[in-house]
Length: 134
Image (cartoon, rainbow, N blue to C red; front, side):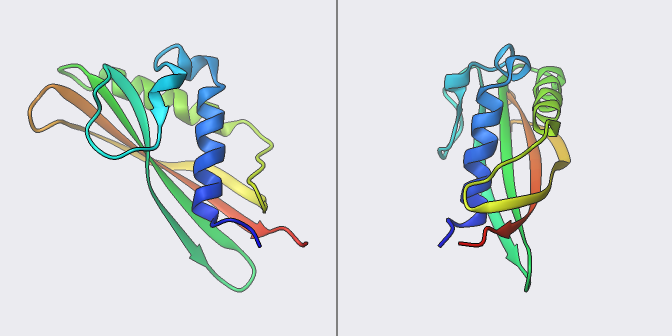
């Protein structure tokens, strides 16, 4: 039995981002993690919400990346989101227990923290997967 698709996607995305020199030049690998709450670091990527949608043959898994930067504007958050997008373009993809038919960043949006201390970017990743035959 394969693990839940959004968990497999979360693990693969986290590993790919932490291994990307372009991403880690902007955010240290130790600043890429899965946890709740507002960041305590100057820069981090929090692997947040996930979702899996199923049909008879394939599934679609989603992962949300939250980019946090202690800055007044949005420029660095956008730069980090672009580096994430570039890192996730590379092929091939291997998700634990799944054959991956397509994986891509589908959307990103940016906002200011309500206290004005941080910028916040949200990047959505989508993967179309099929469970590997045992």
